[in-house]
Structure formats: C-alpha cells, structure tokens
Amino acid sequence: MSLDHILLGLLRTPASGYDLKRVFDERIHYFWAAELSQIYPALGRLERKGWLRGRRAESKRGAGRRVYQVTAAGHRALRAWLESEVELGDDRIPYLAKLYLMDELHSLTKSRRFLTNLRDKFASNLAALEIIERCWARDDPSYPDSLSPAMFHVLLTLRNGICMLGARVKWCDESIRRVEARIAKEASHG
Amino acid sequence: MSLDHILLGLLRTPASGYDLKRVFDERIHYFWAAELSQIYPALGRLERKGWLRGRRAESKRGAGRRVYQVTAAGHRALRAWLESEVELGDDRIPYLAKLYLMDELHSLTKSRRFLTNLRDKFASNLAALEIIERCWARDDPSYPDSLSPAMFHVLLTLRNGICMLGARVKWCDESIRRVEARIAKEASHG
DNA sequence: GGGTGCATGTAACTGGTTACATGATTCC
DNA sequence: GGAATCATGTAACCAGTTACATGCACCC
Image 1: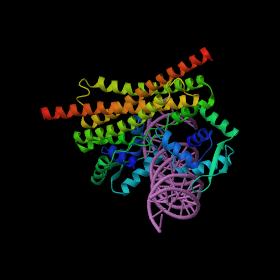
Image 2: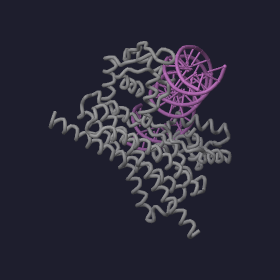
Image 3: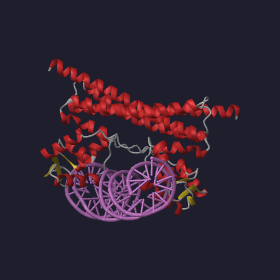
Image 4: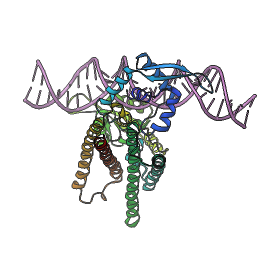
C-alpha cells in the first residue's frame, strides 16, 4: 500500500500523526492526499509491524503527542517498495467523463463555459506551485545545483506538478479554441 | 457518483453490461476504468431508480443478454450531473510518491533507471492514443470539422490524453537530464 | 473433450471519506 | 466564556478490486 510507505519515508524525520497531516496538506497534496482518520490507524498498524517506533512527547498547547520514527526494518521495507515495479496508478478523471458526454446538453456555449471554468482552476493551482518554485530559487542563490539529494527528488516531483498543470491549461486553451471555431461555423452557415 | 452517470451517458445507445465493459476498455480507459463486478450491480441499482430500463435480448453465442437503455428520468439525472460543479478529482500518483522519497536509495543511477522506465511506459501509451487519432483523421477526409457533436466532445478528451501523456514524456526527459547533470557533477568533483 | 469468448452475477476485501467524539491550551 | 488550534482516535459508509461461481455455444 502506498500510504504506508509514504509514511515510512516521511518518518525518517520524527513526527506525530498531526504533523504528518500538515505535511500532506502543505507539501504533498499535488500528488497524494490523506486524512487524519486514515493516518492514525496506519501509524498503529505500522508500529505493530515493527516498521515504526512511537514515543510520547510534550506539546506546548493541548494534549500530549505521540511521535513516530521509522525503524531499521521500516527502512528495509521502504527501500524494497522504492525498488519495486513502477505503478502508473489509474486515472479516474471526472471532468473528462463529463466532457466526454457533454453533447447531451446540446450547447457548445455550455461546453465552453465548462472548459473556461476548468482552465481557471488549473491556472490558479499552477500559480500556487510556481510560487513555491520561485521561493526556492529566491531563498537559495545557487538553486537548483545546491539542493540536497532529498530536496533534489522533491524538486523533480514539484516540476511534475508544474508541467502537468501547464499542460492542462494548454489543453483547455486548445479545446476552447476548437469549441469557439465550431460555434462560429454554426453561426455563419447554421 | 461518476460511474453511474457515465453508464447513463453511454446507455443513450442500448447495451449490455458486457458491452459496456468493452467500451470502458477500448474507448474510455485513459480517463476511467470499470470492472464487470462493478458494472452489473450499478445497472441493477440504476434500473431500480428508474434511470434505466432493461430488457432481455438474444445473443448469437452463449446465454441471453440483458440490454439496458436510459429513460427520460435518467436523461434528466445525466443532464443535472453534467451541469453540476466541476470536480477536479484527487491525484494519487504512486510513481511521484516513490520519486519524492527516492533519495533513500542513495543512487542517482537508480533514480535515472526509474525515470527512463517511466518514460518508456508513457511513450508507449502515447503512441497508442496517437494511432487512434491518426485513424480518425485517415478515415475521414474533413476531420475534425465533420465530427458529430458527440464525437467532437470525444475528440476533446482524446486530445487531453495525448496532451497529458506528451507532457509526462517531456517531464521525464527534463528529469533525466537533471539527474544526469548531477551524476556528471558527482563524478567530476567527487 | 477442451479452449475461447459471450454472458451474468456474488462475496470478501481494501483503501479512502465523512461524521462523530473527546479533551487540553491559548488567545481574545 | 468562546473560538481557534493542537491532538488523537472510532464508526459508518462508499467506491472499487480480486477472486469465485456458473453456464451456453462455437470451433478445433
């Protein structure tokens, strides 16, 4: 299971379930999501397997925390997963499902609205990732050469997010042009 | 639920569960997958809701078939879904999760192998979609202007598949270059 | 008689979401 | 006193996968 191995990887630096949730939301959300209700049972399961070790810790505010860290056995499991077959993952893309069937609405202007709406969302997600990339570059004059091995791999995934969102925006633009060409054709000889 | 509405959309032309499975595998797989064990219960559920009507039909080979078609109520439900809020879907991309954590292997050559392997898979998926597009263009001299409204929307989703896979291949190439630059740097100044 | 393709389904399981429950501490 | 944040968890549900079960018909 991917989630378990992602947790193993993240817990090379100790953290609590609550901390991990923030890591998902802040740094990983563009390729993986996880809820607290999924993280806590996973941590328990991994500890029972001997892949994590948990210990009590203080917290400034609120109740005591439980901080986990990967064990030697956990490291081995992580490495085995990293060396296992590439998994492409399966695409289930609701907006493509809608667009595929959208002739049902008999309205190219509705299709266009759908696409412009989609474009806006992709463009704003893209802008958010580009800001992250620019911050990295700004905070570090020799970027990206100076990156640690860990951050270098993180950079590659960030670049993936940027490339994919850029491609989605481009595809929306191409599609909007095609729709508008058809609208124009309809109007002229319709 | 998206699957139910996709079935509604596909069943504007009558088909059996078995037929639908082939449609998913042949025409829709690049943005949605479905197993027979998921399709059959869905058809029953939609019929009970009054969104589909099923009837017995003959089949040349093997047992009798059950062929479904969308009802007027089903059409209304489909249109309501098509006009509902855009859903972006959530990304869970196992290969990015692996790459994100791959510094654990302390081996840029392993990272490079991972990326070239990934590139090959994307490139061959891309080639398959490009063949479909070329067939469309070849079989129809006035492509894409001549497309029916339904096929025009299908074209847009096919173009999405092609654009996204092209972007993935490009990202792999960019990433491989970055990895190789780091390998070279490591080798030169040790 | 055996393999392949057509055809329909059920059962058990997995991974993930939503809703709920609890409680401490800090800031206003 | 109340909202926000820190913090941990459980229960019910939902969507999807894998494995299993059945049976006809056609071709070799």
